[in-house]
Length: 57
Ligand SMILES: [Zn+2]
Image (cartoon, rainbow, N blue to C red; front, side, top):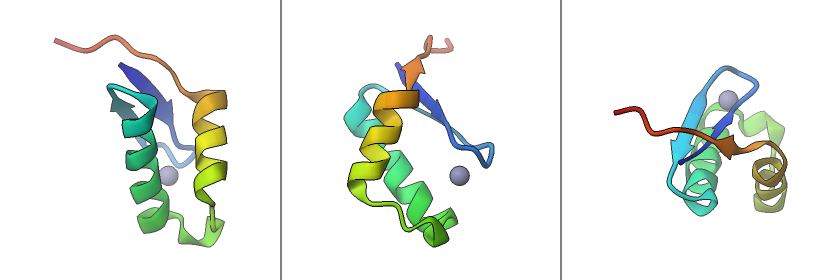
């Protein structure tokens, strides 16, 4: 599992960085439209900040 935390407190987990990107893209568009993040900026953010998370049984 891959995980990332948004500075607003939202926590996201996904199987792959690609899925994580999809979750973050949706979240930013819905909750942080004022950030005007490009796809590239979100990918960079995931590359820099995403970490391995253990799946919770
Ligand atoms: Zn957020």
